[in-house]
Length: 272
Image 1 (cartoon, rainbow, N blue to C red):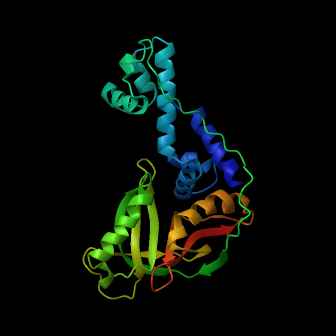
Image 2 (image 1 turned 45 degrees about the vertical axis):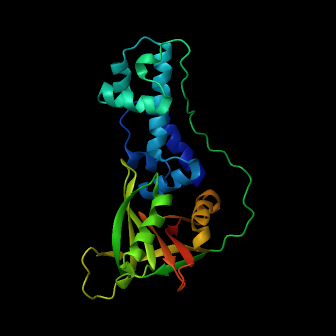
Image 3 (image 1 turned 135 degrees about the horizontal axis):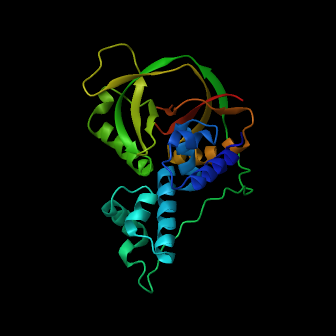
């Protein structure tokens, strides 16, 4: 299925079930893509995580109901997934800038987030170099840290800086950066700074991970353009790729130069 149509299907599913308990795996199935890559692509394409979108839409609708009706705050809180008036009040106040109890006062302003509608805008036209390459199973050794998808773009570079400044390159030079094990309810995932494992003793604080045999879509870039190219993959390459779809719950950055400035982005893919 077309990636953009898949995301729109997922959004419609969220809207149709906004007051129900939403399962992130089922949401991702509406787009016919793994939960890991759906969440990552949604954030890049829409500018918010799936969790943020659901929370914003629920708080928008809750505000409308408080403003226009006479339901009790606790009933609206429960309807939109909050198990206590206190947790609802905190989230509502953060989003709207005013408490639920004050909404029915005259002159109170509320914020609104409308349902997302994915539209195709003619853009791109720039060259994107890539290749499709099959690789056998291999094992890496690295240091792992958990990150939140909402802040990972700014926090992961700090992890790299800390790794090198603390002498981590004595054990791992940083050939790979690997994203995996997404926890959709919290938007948390693991990120590993890694090298190919040579079978020697595993240093304290490090671990190994097996990367399965896969076919990869590989996009060469530079460190300065890494995040920009990552965005273009989801906004331009994915919507226009008819031969391949994502295949696996992880992706890899490979740093190919001695200065770590040249790199590649690897996405696991399979023939449609």
